[in-house]
Amino acid sequence: MRPDVLNNGYRPATKLLFGLIRLFSRQPVPDAAKLVFYRPDFYGAQAKTFTHEAMRGPSAWSVADRELMAAYISKVNDCDFCIGAHTATAAQADADDDRVQSVLTDVGSAPIEDGLRATLRMLGTLTREGTVTSADMRKVLSAGVTPQQIEDALAVCAAFNTTNRLADAFDFALLTPAAFHAGAEYLLKRGYR
Image (cartoon, rainbow, N blue to C red; front, side, top):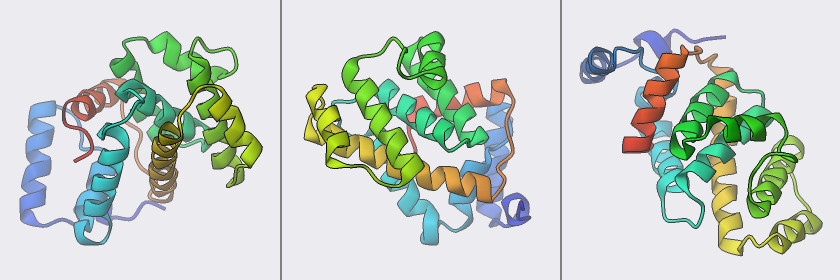
């Protein structure tokens, strides 16, 4: 059930900011942004900091790889809003929409590096089953992924398993392809702050 607070529960300064976003982007403000601005002291500020660090902080994974992880995790969770948002962002970051679509269709046959494939499979298992085994981790390590890369991928997984559940619980409105594209441009320029 979509709470009315996502439409009306903001201070005047936040309403002004949303108006400016709509004016300059010519797109609606995504519900993900509305949620982090609703109670920044309770959820928003911490979520933005954690997600920004996971998605844009120092990592051997590229921004395109991490956005692809977010899209893949969202696909495993069947979260339509986040699939749309992060598929668009991964495609722009990677400049290869076909590669992104192939991962979401079949990670096993997608034209990606073995380390990324093993990592995505592990994140899919963790997302679906809520756990991974030492054998799962050995497969990722044997594909050439470092322990730090695993830690970085797990941070992406934590951020998007949380975001996917919130998007579904609050019934985030789906955006048009143009709005997802505009949101992706913003995320690639500014990150998750």
